[in-house]
Image (cartoon, rainbow, N blue to C red):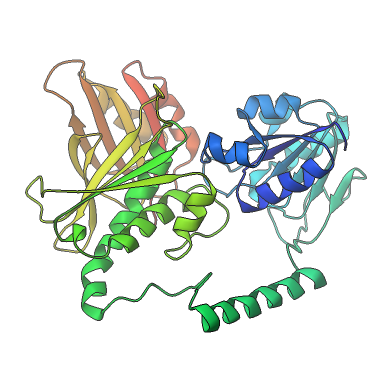
Length: 398
């Protein structure tokens, strides 16, 4: 292992621990993670790299990312072809991250030297083409189920109980911070808004966030902002992390990943009594654009977006949404609808806004879609000349 290159896809808590152990073997460690800052990577002594560079240069590739539409079958025939010949793959994250058929072919042909797998698409694996191969090490999704791990869990629980009884410090609590019943009743609908705005910005932003800006107006600026901030961070981080982030640990997880949070209050705007704006911002001095989304809660308690990057549009924040940016010109909406219809995808609602009433001006759309929509449905839309950006965003059940 000494002198070899380890490529980590995902640099969360587990990926970071793997990196720390790899450095002890004097390995070079690369990491691909769009949601960790350069500063946090430097602190972990890890070199951030594009996925293509990581695959091409790594002797070992280890997966530590959450399962999402963007990461499903991340390791497939195309990405395996980009890997160094004779490399080895380790997957102890999610079985669905790997196209098992493509991996089996690569192992049989010698394209890859070996694989170590703790997870499979079907568990327990009954029909996997991988388990009988001589260059595969397979374990039955044991995760942390070792004697040592279970003993460590018991020790940590005892320490946490001691910290609370002696010092009043609560760590890894599953309950919310203390609020009166009236405060909680008023804040509750906006927690869902905050989480979904955070998730929308996290999934739609074009660049890795280094800073998160949260702006409150109305009553939101007066009470419950600590909870709302945690809900925003949970939405941002749960969209990309395998580990579960909640209202209690969101701030700590964000800090560990080098995210800074800026909070502001402002006067009421847009005629709504309470609004919340979440922005994902790049490193200071970067020329890359950020992304902001502003929303509110209507009388039916449903979270709604009111503006994207200051462009007014109104849409529900739920289900599968096609996030679209394009040059405003005749026929774009019709072309998008036609391409979706050709693939059997039905449009539930289509919300559009534009920066100014001029032909060719920038337009933003949030298109809510019915059912499970494959990533492949977006590819033809991205090829439209007027379209500058198109992404699928998932915001919970519709």
